Image 1 (cartoon, rainbow, N blue to C red):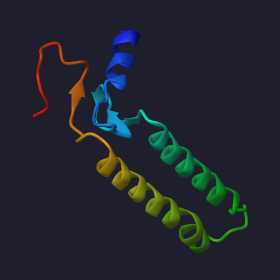
Image 2: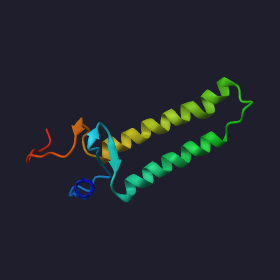
Image 3: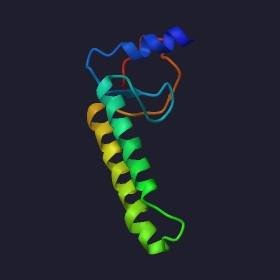
Length: 101
């Protein structure tokens, strides 16, 4: 199963940054650009988390942490849509020679 999954991820003639997940809905990074986008998002989240302290009022937390993380997440989803396969629900590898709908 693991070899089939790796073959699925490597089969990328369109050079997508993100391919569809095999189970469920969403993407998985398959090229260095996709991994770089995920890494940049994680570093940004860590940066905004480190700016918080336990004495921050809730309003400050909303404007210095929650809103930037929301914006970054929306931006990441937009990059995934633009540079990845069209998302759809999927439950494993296609056993038949089916093309995308």
